[in-house]
Each structure stands twice: as structure tokens, then as C-alpha cells.
Length: 204
Image 1 (tube, helix red, strand yellow):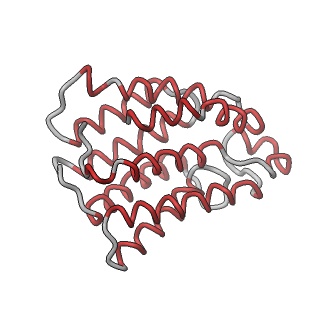
Image 2 (cartoon, rainbow, N blue to C red; image 1 turned 90 degrees about the horizontal axis):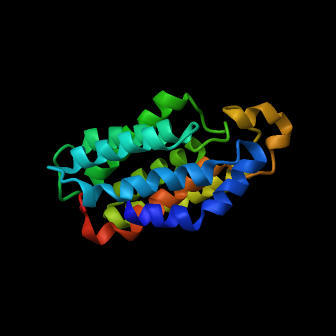
Image 3 (cartoon, rainbow, N blue to C red; image 1 turned 60 degrees about the vertical axis):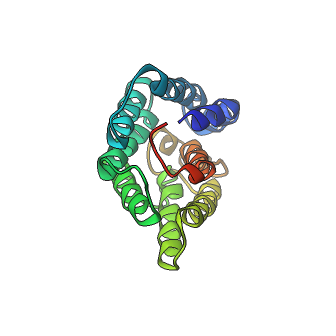
């Protein structure tokens, strides 16, 4: 989460510009506020296991990130933590199941489908690529790399989509030609996970 918070901070202006084109223009500032608070959790508290840590991350995001992104990212981490339980050494299969649980939470909360121009347009191909890498015998690093590549393709595909969910949907055809900010921050999250792969632990 420290890495994710740092990257969000570095990209805050870009995320805000993307959101300004089709939304409220606050995605960058909202995500910066929320992730900075999650990054401080490890220093402020002690956690017994990954589940406890990730659930606190989720609740912190829900409480501190405005708009739709707070509940969506927050639910993702809540479900992720619940699926991981007390696991500490995490392999590709274990983390894959947790990813599916997390994204399932995003779907349950946002009711989005592929093509709606939301963060799910990045999550869906990310999961498909992750699963394919695991089926081919890839380890966690290979699977996360595949997920990042899939998410980037999904993120880029949102540019040509017409939004069907959220505030962007009010623009109709005018939402076309703009990259979705939620899909963009989803890529940043997966890239952070990939960078931290050698540790293979969730708890700091």
C-alpha cells in the first residue's frame, strides 16, 4: 500500500485530468487522500494476519475516498482479505482466488459489465490473463505480469467506449475518446503488486 500510495500521488494530476473530462474531476485527489491513509496503517497499528490488514485497508478506503472509487476499491480489499484469511506465504493459485473474490466484490457493488467504461474493463482482462498464466504453469510473478498486461489493454480500450455507468454516462457519446480514470488506477494497483512480488507477503 505504501508503493500504491506513492504511485497514486505521482499520478494524481493525470488521474484528475482524466476524471475532469468525464466525471467530477476529483479522482486523483480522492485516491491520494485515501491511499496515503492506508499507507500509514502499518506504522500506526499491528495486525495479526493478512486478512485483518487488508480489511482495515478496505474500510479506510471506503471512509476516505469519495465518489464511487472509495466503495469499489474498499470492497475489493475487504473481499481480498476475506479470501486470503491468515495465509502469509501466498502462491499464484491462492492469490488468484483472492483476486477473483476482490473483483467479485467490485461487481457486486458497481453492477458493471465489460464495455461500460469502468474499472471493470481493466479488471476483467486482468483476471483472464492471470488465470491463463496460472493454467500454463506460471508462478505468481508471471501471473501478475500477465494481469498487468491484460489490465493495460482493458484500460486503453476504454478510450473508445461510450460510458454506460456513473457520472460519465450522462455525457453519452461525448464520453468517447477519454480514458477511464478508475481503469487507470486499477492498472497502477496491479503494477504495485507486481513490483512487490518477491516478498510474497501481504503484511508489511
